[in-house]
Image (cartoon, rainbow, N blue to C red):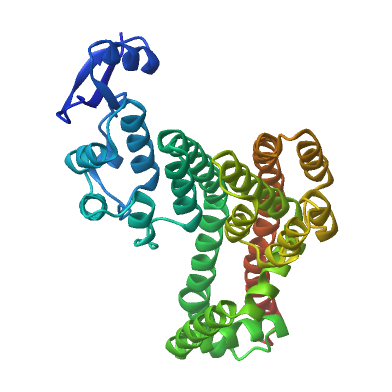
Length: 398
């Protein structure tokens, strides 16, 4: 029978850790609850290995873990202050412990939980604070935190999926770039000496290649400085509103299917979660628009708030914006007409998160061969140019 490690607390705030035998994680949680404790974390012990001995950096604050654990404590009946105190006891990361302690200090000083969160905008986004405020006002903070936990886990899964899909193309570009640099700086100079001694007339492609090799070898430091300067200038330009709009517009043209599904899922999940938590529509729209990463789409749906103020709902303004898929718009319209907008938005988000996986897979299936072809053409040009130069040696008069 599998053995699970667990971390639990009592109603008095006493934290304990240990192991428990159970056929699965759910059974382990139930068995712990039957003993009168509140399970905070139950997981199978990780097998020791290379990854377990190394730490590749830790986040200052694990917002997902914080939300999940606090939600569990409040749902079990602990007061907020006691719940935060327990979190300070079990916090493994120094940064997280300091943040929770500062929240606890603020609450003990008479500040509401949402106001305490608002003082740390570097950790807690605006939509997070607004949802907590709505939960406090309605007396359902534990329910709101549970919804927040679901939202954060879905968002993290979505982000991890996109990042994972980009690992292979990134490795491909890096290895291809290093191979090209090695050919130009170490291999070609050896051939250039031979060709110079023979004094033969080289093909044009070989002359171009040798010139590039000489520039890279003699002025590599200057090329590196110019590349770094160009990258810095590009970053500065993209930080401006005009630069960001043009870059996001280009991404939308090149990856329309992926970007559209990603932003639709983000917007609908955020808006649906906020509405389900009791946040007013206009405020929820403002927060939902802020989570959209593509500025072109974000600007296009600014008119949605105006339409909502005028009593036209959000389905018609979103349709006029022309940035969301027709299926999503139809589902949102049905949600408005039936009074289940929050549930329908979450359904739209779930639908397009599934569709995003297929869209990313299709995009990667196209991107990978294109990148391989480009790298192959560059390296092939180098090899063919050198072979042409070698063959031209036979034309030298003896």
